[in-house]
Image (cartoon, rainbow, N blue to C red; front, side, top):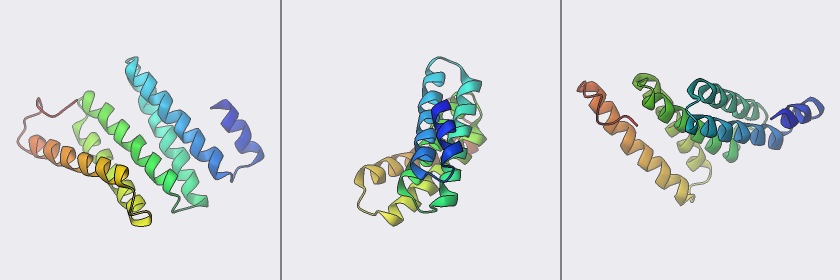
Length: 141
């Protein structure tokens, strides 16, 4: 991550550096979550999302940034659900779906992305319905 920060000093508008910094932070967040370092994981996911947002300033429709921001939001939502932060999880899953929808509008033949988006949509709807029924024990990760 430090190397990406150094590269961004030299080339602040390099989309590849921004996206790869976001990907590194996303992977770091996943590792931290596996190690039960939950606050660090949440911060890494937020930082990854910020890197992808910076990429959107340069290239608003970059499919890699859209997909990867969607994955970071999905991972953040999964962690929040695990930590009983259900409302925040639902919000982030919804935003992830929006990122995946934007990606599919640009590249409609991405079947892997479509299948992942559809699975998340079903899961999010199921969890939202359980939350409305005040049954917090059956959906959350």
